[in-house]
Every structure is written in C-alpha cells, then in structure tokens.
Length: 116
Length: 116
Image (tube, rainbow over the protein chains, first blue to last red):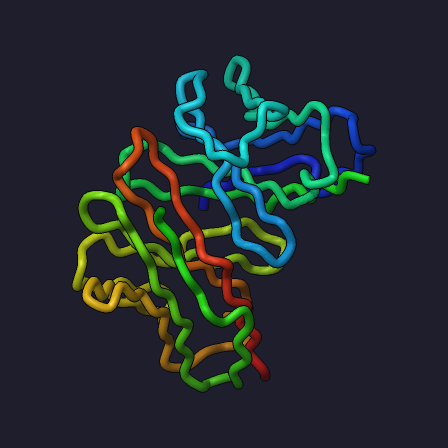
C-alpha cells in the first residue's frame, strides 16, 4: 500500500538545540498531520496542515513548534528550541482528503526524538 | 472532550485461540463518531485495519471484526482464531465532526502477543 517515510528514525539532540523532523508523505495526498507519543502513553494529535496552512493544532503544539511543506517537498516539524519534555516518538501521517470519516490516514513508522 | 479507552495494555493469547480487545469511546460532538482499528506491526507505521462509520454496522478485515455499538459506546475487536503473525499493537480510534479539519483520536493501544 501507500507509504509514508520518516527520516531519521531516531534523532538525539541536546536541549536547547533546533531539530527538524522530516516526512515524505504519500505522493498525491493533500492533508498532513503530526502526532506525538510519549513512551507508555497514547498517541496524541499535534497539528494538521493543508494548502500551506495549519488547519488545527492542539495545546501540545507549543510556540516552539512549526510545520511547513515548501514546494511539495518534505513535510517538516521543526522544534526550536527543544526541551526535555519534547522527547517522544513523532508520527507523520497523510490523507488524500480532509473530509471526515471517508479518508484513511497513512502513517509513517515514526521518529524517536531523544532530548538530552 | 472526545476520548478512546483501551483497558488492556497487553494481551497474550495462544495461537488458534479466540481474541477480544476492548474499546470504549466518548464523543461529545454533534452526531456519531467514525470508529477505527489501526495496527502497528514491529518496525512499521500504523496502518488501518478496519473502520465503521455507521452505528450498528460491523467492519471486518483479515479475520478481525468489530461492531459499532452506540448504546454501549463500544467497538471491541474480535478474532475467532489468532495467528502468530497477528502479534502487533492495536489502536482503537475515532474521528468526529466538531472541527473544520479532520483528525483522529487514539486509544493507548493494546499489545497483542500470540504464543506459538
């Protein structure tokens, strides 16, 4: 089936530094998402993105977070500066349409971010 | 707010035995939510197993099935005879229509371990 690729699979970074997580979504998809999962907890919605704009974000999407997809390339999540509580696995997803219930989200395998 | 509850963090079943993974939900938005089961096999991204968007209906895939029970607000996942290859993490999820953009809310996941 369609694949979402996330690069890298694991990123280790010092607190206060900037990190960019990359996602290569399914090629014809138009809606993009980031989810965050802290070890032992549930996967939580961060943000969704369409047509170059953030459509909705949760309270977990702090001011230090930003997303973009310049010129149809990677869909990125940038954290600047990072904090210890940002350590988690971040999952990217994409869908063909944003219409509720009729579309399947396709997920990547996740990027494990470790902030030291 | 909307939520999904999976009471078992881990379930261990012997091969060829039956399986049930419990899921209940709470949705406060207008209308009934859409319900999903996603699965993550080791080293892979989350993938959709089945979905049901109409209350009272049953969804099925790969021998798994789940019935949308709006009275009990449940969506339990069942399989009559599990295989070792079914070992994975299973996530119950819902989507609602209370926002302008589509998002999915996940349970904590249930790790299924099938013994040979």
